[in-house]
Length: 116
Length: 114
Image 1 (cartoon, chains in turn red, brown):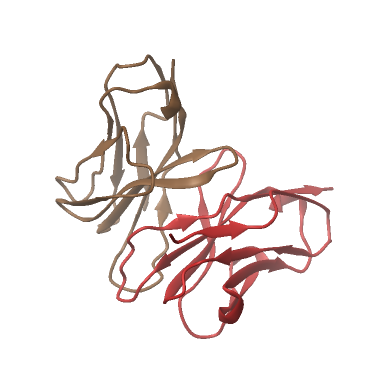
Image 2 (image 1 turned 135 degrees about the horizontal axis):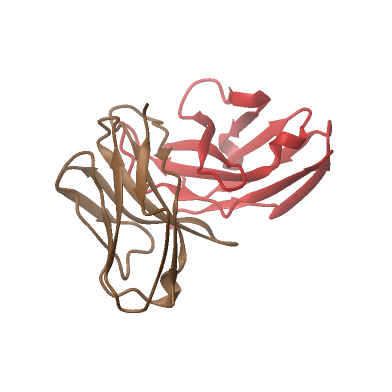
């Protein structure tokens, strides 16, 4: 069965530190990859997505992610975090061409706490 | 304003008392989906719908029903709620036409089943 693994349950950083959150997926075919962010008490918002083209994807708020097909990975990065980045981050994947949404599989999430 | 609206936002109820959580979107999206979010488990998909009258099971459909009679609405029905259905529920929607369509999420419904 398709699965998504996020390696870190809780990450604690100081402001200005660099961030990398790991995400690996198990499906071998064509995939669409997403990172969502959930700020405390809010709903999920899209940070960035990849479905084709340049494997280095830039999203909102200075976040980027790199798709490495050979490693089945889609790690999220930010060079310098801010206190306002404190949130829970979810990696998600679905498969297919032609806009088929089907079953979107989420990782279990990584909580990021940024100390001021 | 483009949005996904869920009601109610909070509900405390008792085991066995049927309840419905409504979800409505105003973006003319074909695809709608329900998730539950539990600590340490992330989001798990309950049911999804690719269009009107087309629904399918996600990863955790037991104990839930859905219907898609109109494009904008996708209610989640708990016929006989049990305490293990206490959770935070999110509805989401998106277009289907192109790859990589992101989902738009509602604000969530926190259900407590006593």
